[in-house]
Image: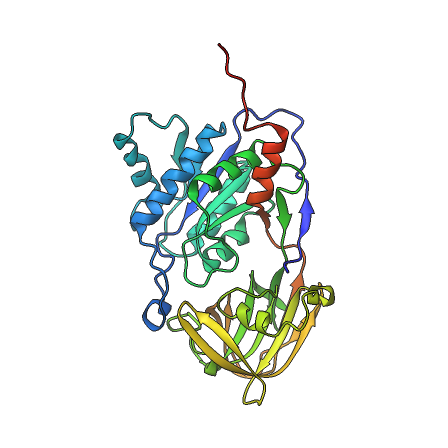
Length: 354
């Protein structure tokens, strides 16, 4: 079970009649090597465009009039979503503008877009991507809540959401109509090398024997020797599924939300859905639950560190690497709680005037 901190965002002293909602749609999500070695769902950019279109319709339906999005050169997801309006009788009325930023075609674009949206006073950021996309957004969004829509490969942080509902929920949060439980802060993992913070992971940190970053994606656990998880829950996929397979009691979260796992040749094995359609037995030599602020010192060795399933940091043999489970991760929108609260408050009702 995910341990979160309910958050009541402070209301502005001035009523915001035109709150801003940001959209960060990653055209590169869901294209890694796991498409070749597993049976991952393909979210092409046509589908992302359709999702984005429904997001915009949902935002407008609840009263949002301003949106800003991350520009990208690969496909133009949001501009294409806007062009779909020619097929409808009703045109979108909300203002949709690209962020004034330089596009590099790398993950830094998502971080820069999130940071710019935070500086502009955005009340919510909708993301289309996977765990990796949301990790780069979390670097820059500060205290702006994220509403993640899954369009990646191994997705634990984002959920498979209907774009219409996601847009409505984000709009309700931006209008401060989502209730006290609409936004929750989730834990994440801080990675430090030789005492200096290098990066954060939303779900998992894994140590690989592979010396180079290469294709980035982790899909072969025979190369992985150690894993740290920020959350442990069954019915997930990817490296986090290993923690779920090791749960010994339904109420195991009382021992801490995270887990440290050592892999290797062992009589103890668990069955893990490592990627869509890729299920394998994994040997576990040791594991323990982690409470908030627990620090794990990884075993010294050369190799690479993967963050949320993608190799990001190359290590030397003498590197001192620690992973701390922290409670100050990004704020995330709880879509069911948001919509339910709005219904109870009557925000989705009106009286017909005869």
